[in-house]
Image 1 (spheres, rainbow, N blue to C red):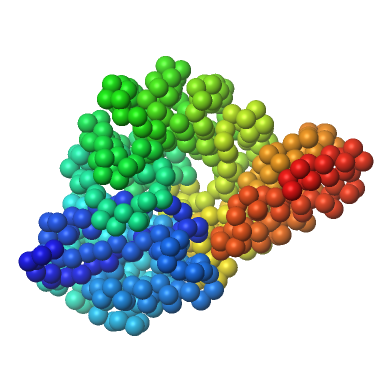
Image 2 (cartoon, rainbow, N blue to C red):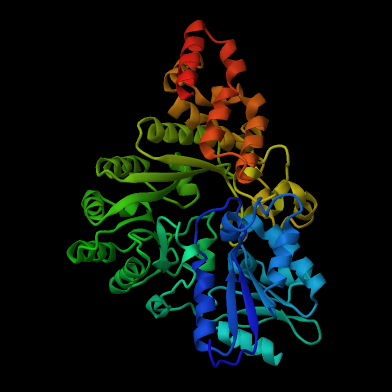
Length: 538
């Protein structure tokens, strides 16, 4: 900024994603904006997920391309680098940070975000190239932190873990969470190219979840403190991005946008009265929705709802403290569909106390939603036991790293290159470990089958799929067992997808082509059906 004396430069690096996903690093943009507008320091955000789509000719997370990341950061001539960390890519943040420190020893390295916050003291104990960990929400203390780094005095900076002059690890008292999120700035994006292809456009509308699921670290990071921006503030942001950036389709980012019924009713009614002519999506629990609210949301422009169901077993619903009534959940999903809104659902398998019978109930729930065309998609995820969760506190010492059975490629970045690091520090990488029980031992990589092969058959080979199921007495898990020989090939296709060598539709079509050997031992009716449906794809 003109006439401004710049004392310190900080570079905020977004978390590394396995795909070039079109998302905005909203939290980092807020921190950068606060420093640039309200302090003497200068900051910038480097989002490699955006750069991976636009600047680099090949995926920078593959092969030996971490060097590209390091060099790009060093070119910014920064004094401080702050990494936003999530469990899926913590290993990449560590490797990049270590190399940065090696090349420029004067550089201050900060780790922040949910994963580092949960492991603050341990992070500094194990990795000497990290100078400090910023814990929780940084907006209220980011200026104090930069001032403290400049003055080489961090004793009065809240919510940080650092080494003092003697090398001892110190952890300062955490500050309170921001009470009024309306106080956060609306971010003007100066480089419009970065947001041009972001559809839907993301707006952070709140933080925190009041519920108490055992597998979720969000409740710990946000301290179960549910906060939502005011209706007027959200409308203000919508109008700002509509009028200045021509955005009319929005993703309201919040774990549970619909938790407060009065709020969501007021919001929808104001959107309708204001005649904003926008469409939007959000996340919700099924048990905070009903017919009247769903109809109101649809009228206000809601076109899709993400619903975390997590298990189709009523026993496991109580066990993991999700506590959904599954009969009512089915009814709610039916209502959402009847109101012409899409549904994205997620389910988890491999909970430590889950039985095979529980899993079978979950599979049947998925089949009901998918085969009745009630959801756009339903993903099945292997239970990730991460720091900050009740499951981690109870089971982290019993986790096993099994490279042959775990499906890292479905959510993680380049795990295969960092096996030794992951094995050395199980506490930091519990995401890539699993709890061995009857379910995980009997059904390894079931997520690959359910997320890739099953929906591909259902969408592209519906007639053949149901013929095959008849041969297996309508037992989808029995079909899973008979496709184990092609799972490694599907994993290779997933890796090609992540390296941007193929499109998702190509992955799906290639996956069903792998069924040919299975089809060849089926009755002629199935062979004929398969041949016809495959030919129709071409």
